[in-house]
Image (tube, rainbow over all chains, first blue to last red; front, side, top):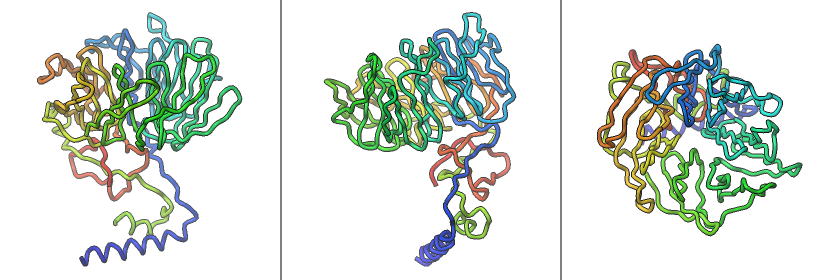
Amino acid sequence: MKLNLIFCLLLLGALACGKKDIGPQLQTDNSPNSLNFGLIGINQNNLFLNKVNDVTAYDFNGNQIKILNTYNRSKYNSIMVKDSFLAISNQDLVLYKMSNTGTLTEVTKTNYLYNSYTTSDLILKDTLMILLNNRFLSNVRTYYSNAESRVLSAYVFNNAKNTITAYTKGALSNLNASSFVLYQDSILFFMNNKVNKCNLNDANPIISSFDGFNPVNDMTTSICIGDRLYTSNSKTIFGFAYANNKLTAKGEIK
Amino acid sequence: MLFSISACSTSDDKVIYSAYKPVLMDNAKLTTDVFLLPAQENKTITLMRQMGNYLLALDYGLGIHVIDVSNPDLPIKKSFYQIPACIDFEVKGNTVYANNYRDFITIDFNTITAPIILKREANAFDITIKTIDGLKVHNKLKELPPNTTIISYEKI
């Protein structure tokens, strides 16, 4: 009881102290060699390891094949691989196209250069490429482009503190999403109270809402297996079935 | 509480530190305590991958939950494969590729009840484990006992 009282007094004291603050500032852990993902990439043919000073291709037996890229690690490096694309994120994100022999050709920077420390996922859907940087809800950015023509196309997603700005051929809408996943022919955006979808097969994808989705906050990661969507808010993995344009809750894994 | 007190007495009182504190492990166990355990509760799921009828869910820095989703209406947690300081993994067939702190390990999951480490490359990665929210840990919470390493973070 006494301890509680002391704690409350100290807490009040601390709060009183805080009143003189102009405002809180976030202190990001930007120490070198600090990562939280992006160590291992995979495509149909190889593994790719984000090693001490290079990115190295491996076979599926775990044997080194070739060093693809070297760099001086000074910030967060993370890699993403999808099909023949390899993205390396340091302070900037650099996208490469890989040849069959492992030669990297940098994709034109103009359309994808972002000040992005961390990247988490790279999904290729036909000729569309989506980079998802939101796994930890940090102040990172996401974009969605036509990788083959190397032209930034339908959407630019700017994910800053759970806020996404979707640009659609000049039209601008603001969404508050916390996670994305590619699901069947659509990207799903997880919202605080709903999930929106954007159909990739449409020439001009339109964002529309799913019905029947239970509110789930703080989504961190999602995956689709068959016709099921599994998405996690850290402690709980939620399962959903998709049918008739509805997501139906199908249990929780804790 | 220490957090609040120090916030008043230092010049960095406007700083918001991480909501997470380190989870520590003895250095000697970092690469030896990689094994299958009974199913565990989720703590911080950060990555999910499919392996056949199984959903593999990474608990940040702790290891991988093995969940049978062959009946999607009735997913069953089968086990937990502990991999200290694991923050990333990938799957090909029934093989899992993961970091075990700074080592790269290849794990055969053909027998789901008895995974086998096929290969280990020491010091493939150069990492320190970062807080989940990307914020700095307060110095008073960051002081490590001798011979320990941060393998994960948990909410304060």
